Every structure is written in C-alpha cells, then in structure tokens.
Length: 275
Image 1: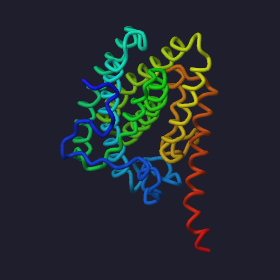
Image 2: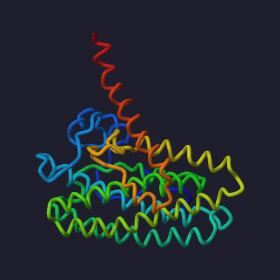
Image 3: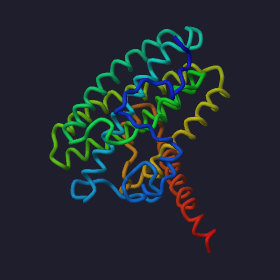
Image 4: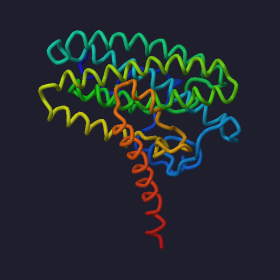
C-alpha cells in the first residue's frame, strides 16, 4: 500500500463533487450565504434567520465530508510511519479515532437525511485530508488534531446550540455526542504534541506555526472568532478541556479577525483598480 497517499487519489463515487480550496475560500459569492469563502460575516445562525435552513444543511454536509476525511487521515497516520516516527501508543490513539470517525460518518449520514439533504448536494473540499499528508507526524497532530479537529469542536458546538434553539432534539443530541469525541481527539493531539517534542522545542515551535497557518486559513473566511455574533464562535470551555490555554483561544479568535480583514481588502482591490 502506498505511503502518504495524495488527496487526488482518495476513493470517491460519482455523488461527490470536489471544489478547489482556493476557489472556495476566495469566492465572493459566499459573502452573504454563510459559505466558507465569506468576506463579511453573515452573523450568527439562528432558527429565525431566513437563510437558516440552507446554511444549516450546508454546514451539516460539510461536517459529513470532514468526518470522512478525518477517518482517512487518522488511518493514514497508523500506516504511514514506523514505530519510531510514530510510537505504537500514538497509533492506538489514531485507531481509536478511526473508530470514532466511522461512527460520526454514520451519524452524519442520518442527520443529512433528517435535515433534508442528499450526499453530494454540496461540494467537497479536501483540505482536512491534505493537512494529514505531512511527512512529519507532529505536523499532522497540530494541523489536524489541534487545528481542524479544534474547528470541529467549534462547529459541533454551534450546531448543538442551533438544534436546541430550533427545538430539534435529534440534531442537538447527535451533535452533543460527537462533540464529546472531538474534545478527546483534540486532547490527544495536544498531549502527543508535548510528548513528541519534549526534547525538541524548535520542532514544537514549527508545528505550532503550522497550526496557526491552518487556523487562520480555515477560520471560515473570518467567520470563526470570539465575537458573540460570529457564525461560528470558539467553544472556549470545550477547547480548555481539549488542552488549549486561554491565550491560545484568544489568538485563534484574532486570527479569524485578521483573515476577515484580509479577505475584505482582497474584495476591494478590483474596485480600486477600476477607479
């Protein structure tokens, strides 16, 4: 079996339509639709919002795709490294994560049906799996388990709260169930980051810089911050349980604001050039 399998070789049937991540993040049509490329925050999603059905279904489909890629990424970590590069106890944690992610895929399929969505109705971007293609297991742990699984904590918490406000016990229960697993996955990443870099502070710093890049790039177009009206608000309490300090949580929120400003300036550039 091939080591470090590239994202373009992942197995997909004809229901899945991939969109390039650069296109998704820089698409100005997402500005008011709550898409990943939004330049301006569309505000917190509530059941009273006119676009809540579409935004919630799209977010749920994105969760489903993320669970598939998280399963694939954790599985690759079990295979891609020898026991020196990735200690056997780390591989056991990744195998446990595969079990969790497989269960999350099944739950997400049922939830997409519950919410009136079909698999493939929205496009797939493979950024989560791409972050799991690093040849350094420490980079994978920071980029995926602390970065993108950390994003999953925020998204699941948002959907759980949305389900509670909408009076949907099925959605709220399922998101709460998966949220508990995500906290565990992020905590595993935090613990192994410290253990694998205990005697190599430079490697730890490089890994944390990579995580910052991931957090900024995938702040949902600046839609994930500490602001109360953000579409995706950082789940502070759950992040603390997962091994994040208050300083790290503040920094992630600020990275989202920085990304929002960068994208706002990008949107204004064509208008400035035309004038």
